[in-house]
Length: 165
Image 1 (cartoon, rainbow, N blue to C red):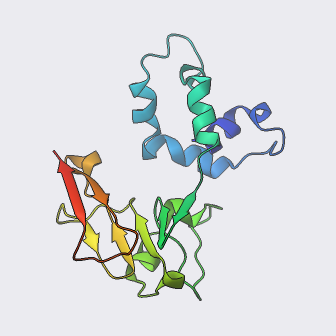
Image 2: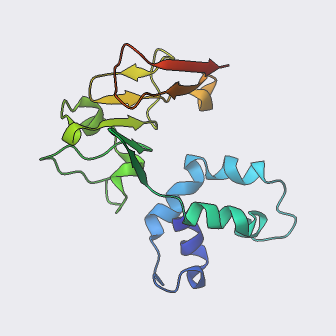
């Protein structure tokens, strides 16, 4: 979303006057159009102007990962130790886009359990493993929206799972 704004409004970020063109274009077919529709009609305004500045500030100040106790919360996952990841020809942050390398990994990720989304489970239930917890159950595709209650010490047998259809 930020790359799209940068791509079409280079003055938006004077520290990055070129922007990331490829990622800017990638946002629109990957939820960008639906996001813009949720804000209402353009009515002659540039697409970025229908999004309130407070929402832009929220996105700008959002952390790509958050660590708490023995957990690491991240959108898509992280690059497992010893592996290299590249998103096609784009310079994308793996915390937003990684899938297979992360999901297949058996790494203990430095003793942390990685709580992630981005890859919907095919069962409609969270993916519960010793090293990671996937909570994307396909809400964007008609599946349930899932939340989990976590204790300070991770025990995959002792999770509070809440799902809303």
